[in-house]
Amino acid sequence: MGGPAITTAGRAPLSALHDVELAQLAATGDRAAFGELARRHGSAVRALLRRMGADPTLADDLAQDAFLSAFEAITDFRGEGTFAGWVKRIAARHYIRRWRKRAELDPAPEGAELADEADGAGLSDQRLDLDEALKCLTPAERLCVCLCYGAGLSHAEAAEAAKAPLGTVKSHVKRGLEKLRRRLETADAPPSFESSSGSRTHG
Image 1 (tube, rainbow, N blue to C red):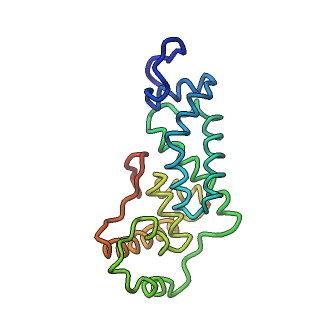
Image 2 (image 1 turned 180 degrees about the vertical axis):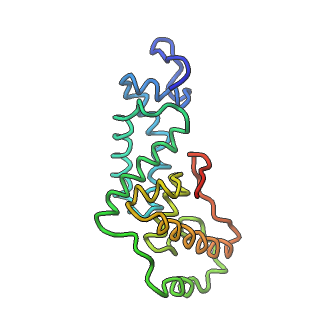
């Protein structure tokens, strides 16, 4: 990580330090500094995991595992991107391991889109947020969309993480985004994932 080394003596309160400075301290074994990083970004990581399909209990467990992995690999974070984006990608890969144990990224059953659209009848009078809109996706679509637009992975990285063909991931993302747009246009809200990982090329 670039920048001057942060020393313990005379340093600013942890809450006043930048994520990169906290990561530098954590790399020296400062657990309090890493705890501040977890405090700052824990909610966003848990929210991503819930959007991917984890229930609240599993999201909490996986977030804890992700931050533990992040602490163990903190020297790999060099400040080239945001810490939030980095730890979200770790969390997404933890979720993927669980996913692969119970499901495959198979194409959605024929007629699934029609069923989803029928289920959406009458929603024009409701204001849907993104979390609600994600419920209209199949599990595979939801996972792929969240990997690419929540965790900031490219299509190729998502395919590698999910151990799925690149074309399958692209198909799930395309179909999922189309469904989200249809649902969110009803609520006058364009689909938008809050992602601190920066823009990525999804090609």
